[in-house]
Length: 170
Ligand SMILES: [Zn+2]
Image (cartoon, rainbow, N blue to C red; front, side, top):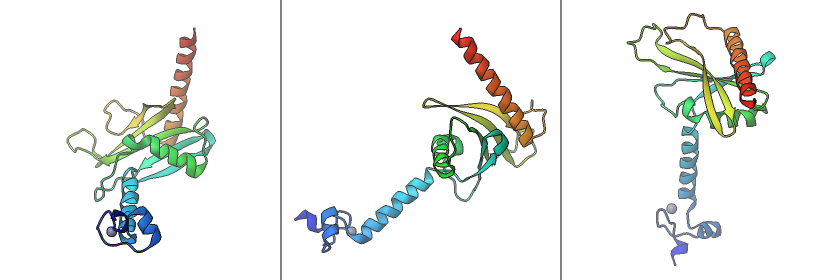
């Protein structure tokens, strides 16, 4: 009978649960570890900062050259989902700002070793959009970076979006 051997390594199974699942405890543990690792790799390293007075949630990507992972941009929906679950924030009320970082190509005009990109994340029915807030590599950028600047620019974009919406309703 097939069922009494492990489907991974072919060893004979004695434990009832193992027979039912057709996999031994050693292979089962290994599979579980692989699944956990795969899940972990689907998330970037990041930290969360709240600007409470403005209901803003800043998501800072942590760059680790030794352990490359999926980028914050490519996993932003999952990350926001995790933050909503962990911190109990409401996506209708909170504004999410993505701070992407990584080692930059040193041929650009900017002297920093890393690029820093702050973008407003707009979560619309199953669609994610980004709006520019501040990038250190942008030659046109005149303003110094600060959280106050982010708050100011978020407010301006939100106002523009509201005006667009009103225009589209007419
Ligand atoms: Zn096995």
